[in-house]
Length: 480
Image 1 (cartoon, rainbow, N blue to C red):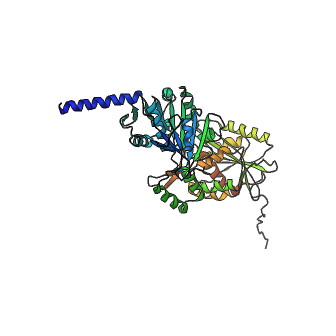
Image 2: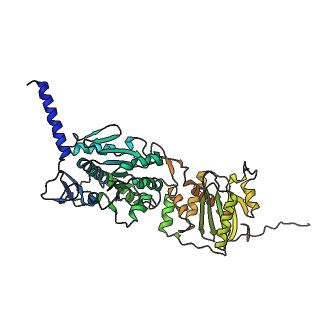
Image 3: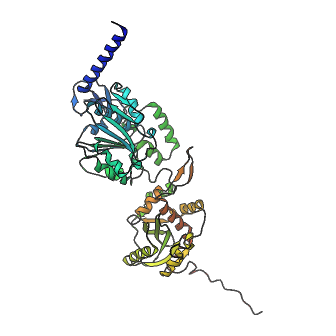
């Protein structure tokens, strides 16, 4: 028998073997270990979570992740810090599920600039580890199984409503770095996934308690939602190389940052936030509370004007020792007449004694359509108007940081403003250093707060001028 014929027969035998594996896939035995630093085997299950006899296993997971094998949970959220094993466990389970039956898996995140930003490499590495190199093939942006299973990788922010609708044939969705997912993206994606038995897995390190996934899957008590909190202490295979980093970070990082990075705790404000320390202290000192409007004190309005962008209006009252932030409005594409009516209505409801309307320096620029300035329009509506001094952003931020210690925020009416202050952040340069503050949907409220700080010396407790009550400066006139 010639060498060429032997090679052909060998290839044919391998092909037959592969076809047999597709028709009758190997029964993978999954060892389930206690979610502790000690490697303690609890038992062995199959890919459907069914207990198996014996103690030998092909691969292993921690028992915290068993809900991945329980189909009664359509939504499984896995949140925690570094070294918890979230991503590797989900990748492993998905590869085994796709091996056992043909499924389509969408691996997504909010922003994916390239395939390098995805979990593609995690999956490829595990294919060889599981001994499934003969079963899976992959291109530059897709992984396919011999039985028709497929993994695709997308960034939701790049998709249109119509392109997301093309995901309707998906069986399982894996949202990695899910803290960055927006309500808008989830509101479009989730109703699109309609296959019988379709499921969603989310892996993430929480950022803020206002993240979309936090509200949907941590604060949700639905029976088809399972929230799993894990960290390095729950990983039986926590690598020693990460333990070195962990111990170094204990001495290097603040308690807030260490708890966030390694224990998966929410931050008081976004990482890199301009007012991270200040907003943290406001919550710690319970200065985010119930603050009612005092009818005996003037209410001042501090504005950041926009048209296509957001207009932000902060409403405050001043006492000798406090700045009380009692209201906040934010909207766009509204006229000054509409904002005037909004404030007048709010003022009537709260029996407000109106003080000064502080407008930004550009309020003295003529409007192309009306030929009037915002300052002129607001004065015509009967408001007492002052213009915020035009100082640098850095100087304004320094003033705002000093102001925070005096501020009490009404938690019910200023939630959007607090969210802006939590998420107002510096841009990050390639070398990891910080640049200028980012201009985005959160910067308008933060700009208005900066203007509040700039004007704090002009705020009064009444609707009288800031010079009221000060000693009169008599001129010294003499006839001699």
